[in-house]
Image 1 (cartoon, one colour):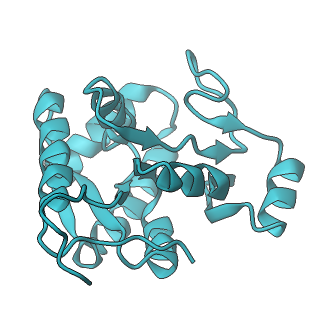
Image 2 (image 1 turned 180 degrees about the horizontal axis):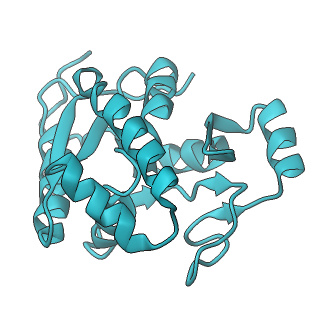
Length: 206
């Protein structure tokens, strides 16, 4: 990497935010969007059904499985993952265009997706949002009312496996109950610090 000249703006970042199901990723991203920073938030494509209040093209790009898999086969996603029987993918065109425009790109991906992003863009910044405890995570998952007791057990087992991958991430942010503002502020601070590096990350998406 080269030292950035004093008068030059920092190159755009690719930031992958992840964490176990129910940890509060969507809430944190919603708060980050309210900060009005020069960021592009990639809208993830998925084959799952919309939840109450979700709008196509805003919260997710909702696709049927056939369309999604065709896009995957055409290499139109940076990464894809099948989670609990549903597909998720990061549209490649969104990422490329935003980086071209000089915008920092924020991705919401699962833990295995972060590994794929890092393989394609080694200079990407990875942040894992973690719960204060597994008991707190179970409480949050239960409050959603969309999982059975067996589903909760499966998700908590998956969460433990995902949290064990924390060592492969650049940063971790604890999303404590009732402290969403602090969570978003810490993510904002990480991005700000990365933009101040003397030897900046230069993202090249393979």
